[in-house]
Length: 145
Image (cartoon, rainbow, N blue to C red):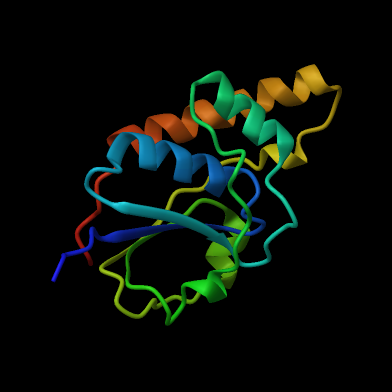
């Protein structure tokens, strides 16, 4: 029997920006130790094009990702570590996730809410991208409390 790596699920509301970027970065930085996935409590129809663009700028391709529902994982996948990256998902996600060792809340601003021209929006997406990169680069599961 081949042992699977522990599954980390990154959860957001729409699964179109923050959680997708976090999935890409966590896979890049920690994919040798963990299986990484992302989902949303109310998934959008596609990954935000500016999220794809700013990730390509740093050499990570999320263009083939698609939003998924948390229902695909809840009770169906052995999620060991849950990372919630937005306020709305923290409020709507089950407080207890069967089988999870850790549940961590690390909110980031929603770049999809940024207004202005494309250049202004890109600046916001890049800021959030870089914050997520910093978090994912140093992330380690916190001990359960």
